[in-house]
Length: 105
Image (cartoon, rainbow, N blue to C red; front, side, top):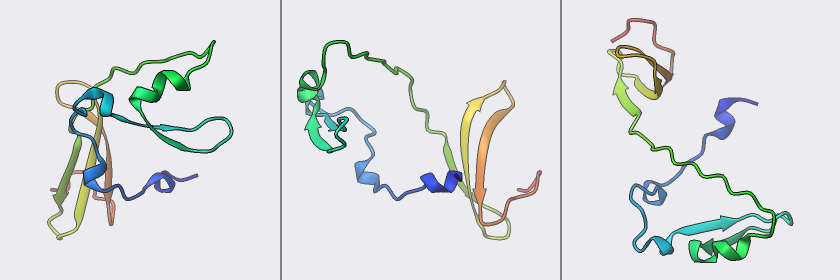
């Protein structure tokens, strides 16, 4: 399996950058054990639960960490900052047509 197996086109208008108003208007995709996808809304969420289900909440915040640029040669570069290591270093993923060498500007 390659990381590129997870690349797909997602139209910008489908990316939520603000919560739905009202919040109850949020969309929900339910995938039951039968495998039949069901397009629902958050108002339907309680009906999706059964006795004994465990809910896990993720309250992490998304930071704007995707940077786009161009190499001196004109090639495009995308940098995705994964996390801050300290005040001067980050862990990042770089994508380009040809991998830039260290120190390339």
